[in-house]
Length: 112
Image 1: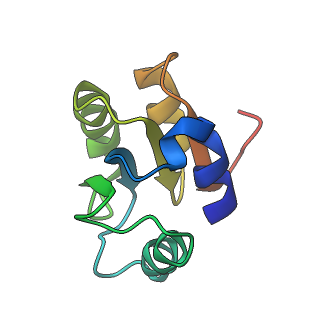
Image 2: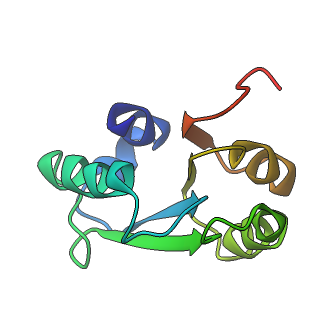
């Protein structure tokens, strides 16, 4: 999961310049153990929030009808990569952009 998000950034992005990772969650940042693991893993790889990483987080709080609007809002923030986590989060994220790389960790149907 973490390697996928890191690998999606161009090599130059792995330097000390500030990078922006957009995160779209089905649940909430506080309640999602996978999101906590993502943060920890990014830090282990040298991507430190406030130093060389900004996280743009949008969370549906378990309300799937909110996902399309949150995905569009996240894309407007122009992150370098969008990371979708949980449930059917990837589908609205993929529909919101065709230009920003998309990494997903959990999806009910990744082929769809």
